[in-house]
Amino acid sequence: MNRESLFREIQKKASFLCVGLDTDFSKIPPHLHREEDPVFEFNKQIIDATSDFAVAYKPNIAFYEALGPKGWESLQKTLDYIPKDIFTIADAKRGDIGNTSSLYAKAFFETMEFDSVTVAPYMGVDSVQPFLEFKDKWVILLALTSNEGSKDFQLITSQDGKPLFQEVLEKSATWGTPENMMYVVGATRGEKIAEVRKIVPDHFFLVPGVGAQGGSLKEVAQNGMNSQCGLLVNSSRGIIYAANDLNFAAAAKSEAKKLQQEMEALLNKHL
Amino acid sequence: MNRESLFREIQKKASFLCVGLDTDFSKIPPHLHREEDPVFEFNKQIIDATSDFAVAYKPNIAFYEALGPKGWESLQKTLDYIPKDIFTIADAKRGDIGNTSSLYAKAFFETMEFDSVTVAPYMGVDSVQPFLEFKDKWVILLALTSNEGSKDFQLITSQDGKPLFQEVLEKSATWGTPENMMYVVGATRGEKIAEVRKIVPDHFFLVPGVGAQGGSLKEVAQNGMNSQCGLLVNSSRGIIYAANDLNFAAAAKSEAKKLQQEMEALLNKHL
Image (tube, rainbow over all chains, first blue to last red; front, side):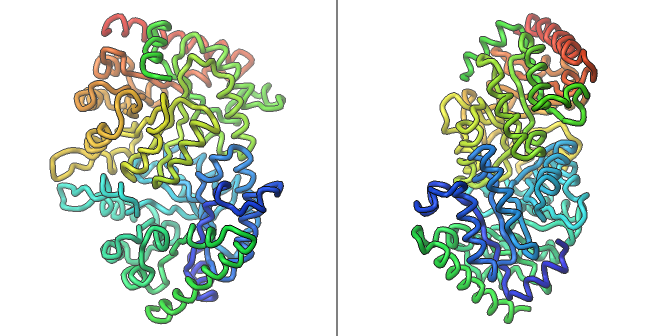
């Protein structure tokens, strides 16, 4: 999916919501355990319930990988089930030397057909470039993450006086374009989003950490929105585990709708 | 596998060779394409041919992931086939926020039963810690990689005058111990290995890049060996693709043996 189509979806749905499909077998409602593929059945009902309010779905690959080959089948079925006008993100945080990154790109863009994949920057340009060679596919590069450990290296200041995440943003912005690269920018650091937005004014940000991780949607929009919205804000647990009983899908729908309505107001205000 | 058992294997085989199982369907001998699981059949014959000379096997996960669920089955069968006294490395370069890293750890240490997994440091302590909670399992953290792009960020100098890879080594050495943490140190930078060895005198290094990537084994041993060897030197393509015909396994054996003999001489000299 290209940038124009993504922005059109955002306008159409008045939403920049990404639903994180971090589906943990031990947390899904017990009545689904009887299904042949409980993880897929859960995702299917979540997608049905939330697809009017979401412009992106983001399965975190670890949750599927932990289940072995069966998990990958659940993931593939989930991906196939997501409506084609919704942006898909393989939250995989991959990255390896060139020929190996090509294979990861193949895994997520060809074997499966995700629109985008999250990539870790530590190994540099030749670990990222192979992902950028696919038309209408996206790299979502880790820049400033929302976890406690992000301080360990991402905030180290270089001799040029720049924190590492800034070096990552500046250098990587020359590898791709706002048409094929986005950045992961943690929402628990509201003030930091404005700083990142200054460095890369045009790129989309994938913002985790609204909801369970404690970020404020209002602050994110205020500091991070650009003229094409430029934000995909993710919520996982807050939506998919809103309830743990027969009504889990309705509860997920209600949470997704609530976020979409907040987003609609913010889009009206800032766009 | 613990450090003591690993060192015992190194002494017994007079080898610190790791064979990289980067098995690419398009590169395996055509006569194997008829097999039900060509990737596993190839690996099986490579393992049979090289297990006398290798102390570790390292499948690069991208090669299996690119094949979808079937690839994961080939990987699992390969892992099950590796003799139990040989150290196994999932070269996966994973890393995510805490609860997600726990799932990656589960995927590689429980669902599959690898001894170790390679992890990217960018997200900091809480992305690495979950892997360290498994007894006799190892994190192999990316420190200084062998690819061209390693210069982009790993060599950036901080205000304290330290390159990023040194910050990674110093900080992460306090998270784990030489009993549950190793480092990836690229062999194409001989002079750098001595520098890394000074910072972390006791840890094992996984050294890629001997052979196809152009590093010298002699230089690596001279600069990197410690009193418990402290090295696992990987060769992938140079061994597994030594020939592409009916004799591929014999050719792999011969290459592995050649490296083992060089290693034996180096162990005698430096240990």
